[in-house]
Image (cartoon, rainbow, N blue to C red):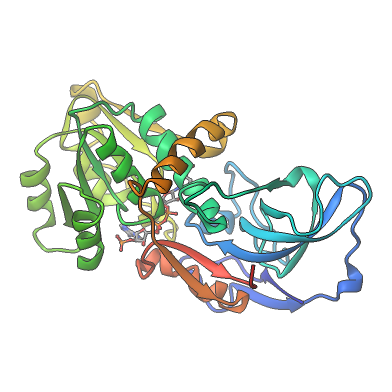
Length: 334
Ligand code: NDP
């Protein structure tokens, strides 16, 4: 079966020689005590994966050269070792990696059963890391209140599109920022944001000032110049949620902020967070989001790329914005 390993650390963009494909024989696998052999069905492609390729201190260790690329995914248990709590056919979620099969410790797998109105794939999107990131970032870090003005960058993405919808549910005025007309049309017509601004438009800065006025919460997925612009438009006691900085993930030297002093004048807060710190609160968020999926009030989109061999070419789509919705790779049939 096939696996994809890290071959060379990219300096800027991910390149064709960043990863390489390997084959592994089934007889090299040993399913030990309290372990399960999983056949991978879908893998999630996330912007954070670019950070895992960097040999730098972060919230997780870097992927080593020659190691299977780390990725969260869904799979089906095909066999179990002695004393495993899983059984053949169980649907599981875990950090399975870019491989068709993986031997996993029981403790590294979560058994899932999709609630009514959801599918297994939702556990890589609104019921998984992106959804939980939106939820805890907006409520716990952003402390959004009804009537406030919320601005969301990366608004058409997996995290951003849920932030916009949760913001609307909370009674906020929501303005999204995205990089394509079709993404803006989806946000305005289907998700009901008040306005979506295209940051690639030559009049973007002016549009931002005119449309937003001043903001209470800025949910930042992109960093860079858009963050700086948002910092110049803070209301008193505004909160800036540092969720991601995708515009800088491929850069060796990210650019600095010019407008940070406005945090002082506006007595505003800027705060980074990592969703993994909220693990004990995941169930209540999942329940709430699942209810929205079931009654149709929460919408989501997927961009599915077929075949593990296409994962290395698909990952850069996140950085060119060619993904429309949560980007996943289909590895095998469910
Ligand atoms: P998305 O589905 O939003 O995909 C990435 C999108 O980012 C692209 O489609 C593109 O959309 C946009 N983008 C790419 N490059 C740029 C750029 N230079 N400037 C502006 N926008 C750009 O990914 P996710 O929803 O999975 O992730 C969104 C953010 O959330 C990421 O920054 C990620 O790292 C972060 N994150 C943080 C977590 C945490 O715990 N803090 C956990 C999970 C994710 P467009 O066409 O609009 O440009």
